[in-house]
Length: 474
Image 1 (cartoon, rainbow, N blue to C red):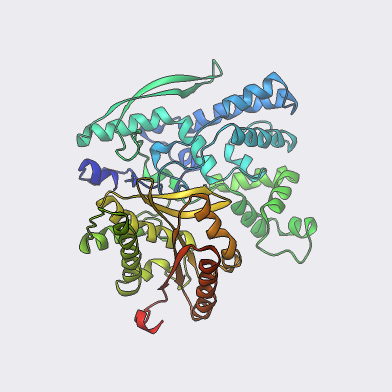
Image 2: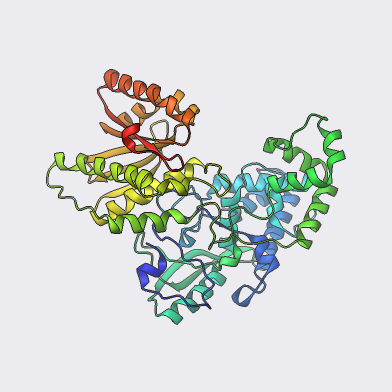
């Protein structure tokens, strides 16, 4: 459920905050460049706080001369241990609000990036995201989490103001690393009164919509686009006349490291150009539409399960999967899997749509559903369970994802065996006529796996082509 639903908040025109889904992270990110471009109210001076922290750590890295054994380097790494800020409910985590986080390993990656910045001729930062252009492993979620950590107290003040306005209750939360004191050069503890997220017992921090984007303004791909449009001669000389507009990130990073003057021009150009936040109302990438659509469908088509015995559980799972198929094929759910220009959206959107149907039904029937990040030898999409004994795993893939089909004979069985689960559902989403031609092969593979392993893997075909025919024609 969204923040407004949980706390009974009626928004008005003055409410400029993002209304988060409290049980699932939304793939939007807090963009420090938008802070820089539009500081208001509690956030006046926020970008300076972020940059002050980074320049402090940057000097430690520079003085360490890149020696990981030095006291200065270890101090920098300790300061850079910035964990995921689950309270903002943003990022890449699929079914909850806890993603991969940002522990010591990621702190070391960031420290390496700062040392490479020293070697690349950077003397101080005006935008710390620049380090993500010269170092792999520092992506949108890392930049967003760093920013949220460094402006936590400002986000808290903003959230408390909104909570008081709407009568939302709060309680005290403690943060051992609440804010960074640049004079003392260390993290300080803090206690904050904030609303509580009923799904995980943690605090909620609200974020102004004007600071959210689907990617940070400054990123490697955007740097390449700038170079393609403005530094074409350098690109041709650096690579070859056969270079294409799409290249690997390592090539972009190589160009950025070797040409500080281009990075400087890029930053100046971006500072002079208006950066826009993600259009939440229009939602062009379908990052939010899945939630409202699936909530409406499950409310209009309720399911109640009486799970008294083991044999009651699996028919309930089957029925939820069938409801997803019906939603997509017969209730225009397929339209959420396509862009306005007629191109299909990615697999992640299809998985979100599936999660929306399953999660709403599971929540209504006291069944747990979670996205599995590491079972056996790789990721599984979802695990549905009722206690420890009743568990089923689910995969949803686009039929065109041939890379996955090639590993199907070994991957899903290993997931099931690792968790000692005997039942799995394999949901295949069809987007084209070519996809339909793959269905027979996929079903043959599933049958072969079941025969060899004794598992019970069931394939379900979902036709998401525009204006699809009746399922009986499949």
